Structures are given as C-alpha cells and as structure tokens.
Length: 71
Image 1 (cartoon, rainbow, N blue to C red):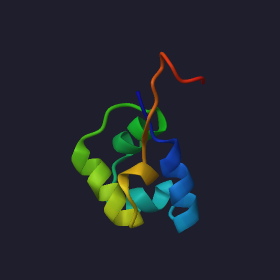
Image 2: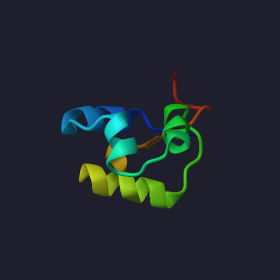
Image 3: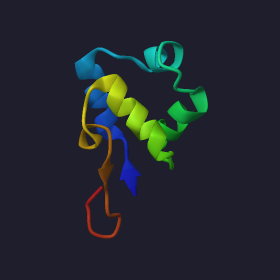
C-alpha cells in the first residue's frame, strides 16, 4: 500500500495548503481526495506534486507493507 502521509508534512514545511494545490496549481478535488484516502494516483500527479513542492518522491509518499509493517 502506498501512503501519502509524508506529503502533508512536506506541504506544511513548504507553506503550501490543500487550497493552494487546488486554486494555484490545478490539483483537482478528486485528486486531493485520493491523496487523503491513500488511493491510487497517476504518476504524472506525483510528478506534478514534486515539481510544486521542489521535493523528491520520498517526500510525498512511502510504501507500507500491510503484512509486515505495524500500523
């Protein structure tokens, strides 16, 4: 499972809100909802987030193995 918890931390560090992503950068509400609920996204959305935040993929998402990782 991919989790986007790191995205919210990175956004806070960079001073960018969900409202900014929607209004200034063209990230749609359905995309934001998918991020909030750790659902699948297209790679180009991750690419766009990394460009907006000037960060690496690891700063946006992480792999979580449901079978071996503790919650």
